[in-house]
Image 1: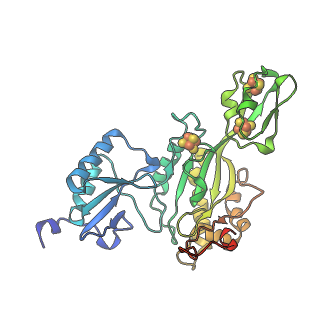
Image 2: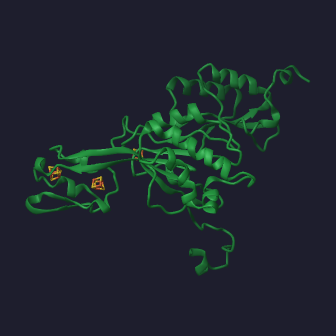
Image 3: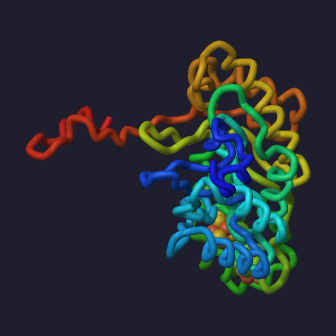
Length: 328
Ligand code: SF4
Ligand code: SF4
Ligand code: SF4
């Protein structure tokens, strides 16, 4: 064994679980970094660049879940890579049947659309739940700051979307018309004397009316996250279903913990299954009864189930026309 070999103490058996992913090249691995919410300090980014330059290939890869991946890392350099990254506080991510690093958009700090502090929520989840073994399969969490939903919350095992419920104080209205010209959902129409009429059933909870009103006539009645559960992407995509409304940011970790608790028990003996599949098998009501005990004010009373999307490739080979069943 060479001196370089002797220095490597990383557990080779658990490499992938630990964020070290085997590449095609002999002895080479991709090292996936832990970047909750996709946010990195410039200082840390510089350190990552130094380590990549010293031990990796000619480029790094940005994963679809906001991680930086160092490529072409020789396994003999694992200890040095981990140690040097650690000097800036940078850690390696995990894979496997665990709670993964949460993804998030910029949220409300500087993004004018943001309604909730997604960055704080992703840090909370990362600090308190990252790496928690689910006992069954991977578990992904995502945060969107507003209903534009850029991070596609509903295709995570649990996804969060910032929302606000608007409230109108008609007496303060100046009749400028901005709110009903701005609302894209026809949730506000023009009434007498250019005063707005609110149609709550159409409202998407985006808060645009509150932002645009120059008189402060539209205010925030409540603010929080809409929560979706049971989603995933991949070979057989499933869109998660709405399970809670106006969940406060401070309750996010506890809410996810309740879901993990149910998932762990309900999938017992089922092997490698994602949350959405377990919800479909056990029934959405059986699932919701669990978080409802601790979060009765937030769990929805009207609900659907996670929905499988048929994106099958099979049967659609060249020369074989799509049939009606491919669209069902
Ligand atoms: S989801 Fe909303 S807050 Fe987040 S990036 Fe998109 S528009 Fe901005
Ligand atoms: S919150 Fe958005 S969707 Fe609802 S009324 Fe205001 S602008 Fe329209
Ligand atoms: S934006 Fe405000 S002031 Fe203008 S019509 Fe709407 S409620 Fe009235």
